[in-house]
Image (cartoon, rainbow, N blue to C red):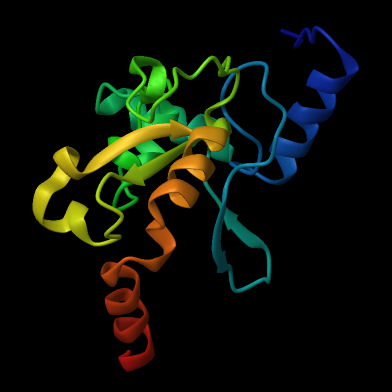
Amino acid sequence: MSLVFKSEKELSKWEYQAKNPNRICSVEGCFDLGQNMGTKRADGTLVRRNKCSKHHAEFQANKKGLTSTEWANSFHPYLKYRKDYCENIDGRLGHKCTTTIVWSGQLDTDHINGDPTSHETLGAAAMQTLCKSCHAYKTWKYGDGQTAGRKTLKERKEAA
């Protein structure tokens, strides 16, 4: 029995895996290296997962019924409250947002009252999702950078 490969790239992946098992992503069609685990074997080679970073995140998210972005955000103290649209579409800042969101990086999670620690006690009720433009406007208009919570946060960091 002989092996049949669809492409030279697939053949080279097979040859590489034969010499270095579990180093390339095990997802069919993906030729990325497995995620680096941050440790080395006795022979000095890196220990890698059997999936690349992207597919590992998708796998972990699917286990919990989340998208990979939702899963990644779930580890952040307040990104887990971020929605996929600017909440100022209702005009809460005095104008309606008309920004077209094409990438989640255009969105920020904002503390409504300006206190950067309010999410610890109030949870989602203390948070809103704003596009970068609306967030900058709200911060300027209400002086969020000058709130008492910012000073408390600065004191906490200095004490640590």
